[in-house]
Amino acid sequence: MTEHDALAGLRDAVAALPDADAPGDFDAADHATRFEAVHDALVAVLADVDRT
Figure 1 (cartoon, rainbow, N blue to C red):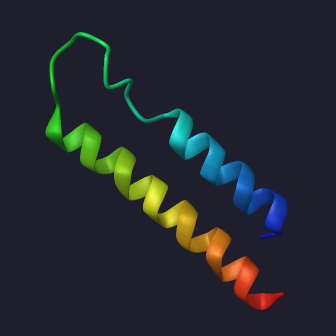
Figure 2 (figure 1 turned 90 degrees about the vertical axis):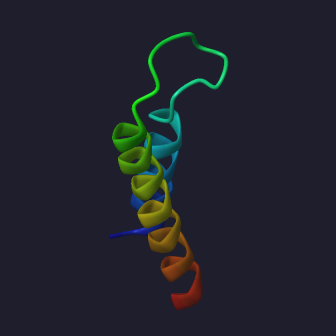
């Protein structure tokens, strides 16, 4: 995975997070999955930075 791919993955994961102001039902499992994706994407970006 290139640094560009890792950053794009992080951007996509953050964009998938729910809007805090949006009305609707709170699905804890869905939120946890999305935040886990952000965490994984951030770890990938940091790993790429560490390799440079």
